[in-house]
Length: 147
Image 1 (cartoon, rainbow, N blue to C red):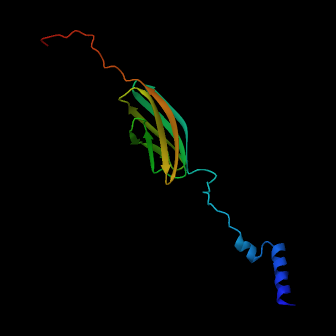
Image 2: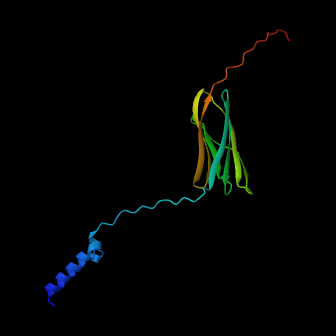
Image 3: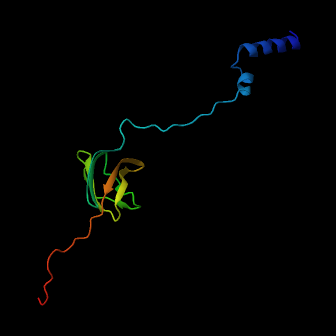
């Protein structure tokens, strides 16, 4: 077999088999991205948000389920204030509750976010609290002098 015959046969083989080394080297490899795997259940799950506004005061509670005690719970009150919140947690059941009170200085609609964090996992609930600043109490009694 001559050199030209062998080279022609090799060229025909490379055309018929696109997966030969020469064909693979000429192809651009596709971009690959690693996507985060999310477990079937999140380490922290927030639910059952309850809240009430009376005048300028907001009161709220939220339940959560967590496989271990959360690292922190906090609320953003929509006026620039963020506070850490007290929490109750039962390690036997994995159930807990976060609760808080907050007094607003200005009336209005405030977006409030209550969050529970365990490691890098955070779950949160957001709601809008409409507040009114209570008027200062007025005296209707008579001032007595000399007492």
